[in-house]
Length: 303
Image (spheres, rainbow, N blue to C red):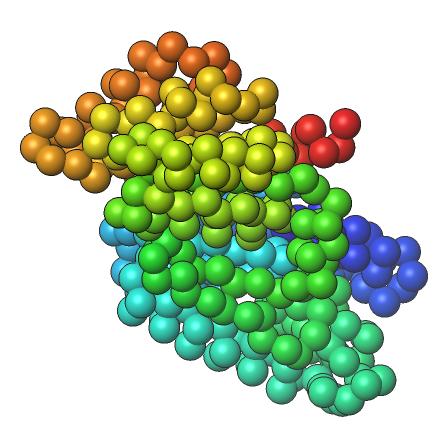
């Protein structure tokens, strides 16, 4: 449950649209909900400002679908990282089934005056659209998108709210050394965008042709946070760190020849950077970089 849905629930109780019994039922899933194979942290968004993110690798299609559909009931956006196309299809099917079942349970669905959030819903079961307890405020199924390069599933309910949040924030620059680093960079970029940030992508500007980097230096310096994604020897992070006055988050990738050791060489180079203000996340961890950049950007923007 995020802050938006909690406020809607409390406002519903105050106005009489939501009964105390319904509110009690909704809050019973806090701080976590046991679904046998997973404990969903429904309190994470209230604690951190960001919802729980599903790491899809190693999970079955059914498990990913059930988890993401449940999170989507009370979150504006849900991320599934390291996801496969098959898991994406399963999520779409589960969401369609859940929303259809919900919206068939009350009268007036789809009408202007009878939308799910109007209070017309008389269904008091789990996931009731109009009860205010579940967070399903209308009968339009959330948008579900699969970003193939990033291997990320995004479930988005309120695009207007996301656009408004982006408009209030400064940008995050995502810079790659080479084209082969783009999948990890896209994981960082999509994560940052879904968490409400403007992202400026600047790809294939590595040190082997450093004039390409200098051509985009003004854009990089305009960002509030810079994510640098590089494999091979990982030198780009040090170069960028010496050229900007903003936090630099370095992401080593596993791209490179044998002595790259699956990204270990790039990681060690970044850890030993002589540039100040450079922090490093794990090998290929684009998600971690995007999340951290968003947290920094949110604090700096609010200030």
